[in-house]
Length: 161
Image 1: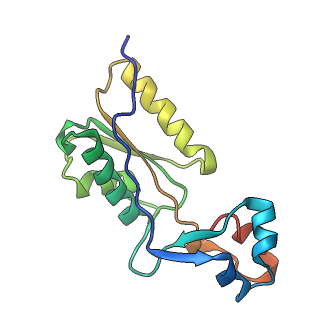
Image 2: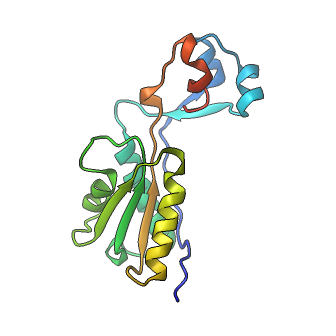
């Protein structure tokens, strides 16, 4: 029985950095309060020029480079996300298209925080059963576009930014 292994890792984050001090200016919070509860000092937010699929595509390219493979070596694309750009098509299909992988399967797992673990598990099972040889698993979330930045939303917004 084959065993799955991670052969490449890639990431991409938005350029805009939002600090706890930035959040102090728009809601009733402070750096100490945020750090005591979360340890977070800054987070990356997307701007109008970016979205989850753009971040995912660049992360996928970086993972492929790190793995020293070609996009054509990939048999299946799995994307873990709850924040797709569109209801349909999913981000996995956008990755597939952007990387020129026209004849491979692609699907999204939408299970909030646990989606990436499920995606890895499903990918592992496909490798073990030898249904697929090389699987690209991508996690992509953009929470900053859906935050409640009012005082009422601060308890969640400072965590999921």
